[in-house]
Image 1 (tube, rainbow, N blue to C red):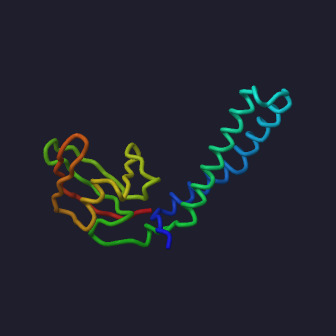
Image 2: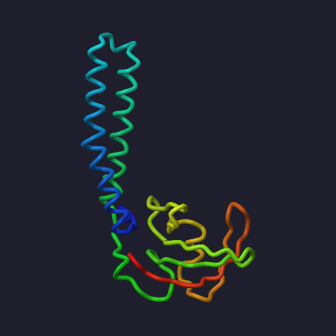
Image 3: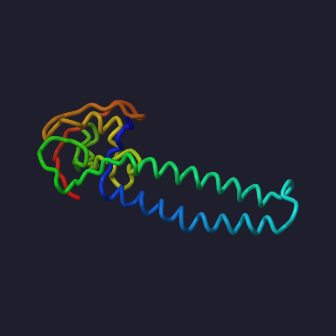
Length: 159
């Protein structure tokens, strides 16, 4: 049995878009590069040919990886979620108990995470510490910068 990969509908759509681009645009570009390099003659010493073949291999590996993730996708519709406890898809507003700095994170699938965009992976230490908690709770998280204490100010669900 293969393990399901949780993701938002937005993350699923982004993966499908990337896969479509790799299949239709990148594949064609690489095929043209290989054909052009072949036209230059001797393939054994043709750096352009070897570079294009390497690009082809990397593209196909990425396609296979995306196909695997999409086949195992467990798409979670955040608009149908509610409640006051932190779970996948929740947007959590926190305040750092030491610096009084407010931060807001949405808990998403591993490949969707982008801290600069306020999206953290369900597998990240902070998300793991938040799961199951609710507004008013305090959590302690071991981060690369040391232990941090946060108070949960708000838990919401929005697509």
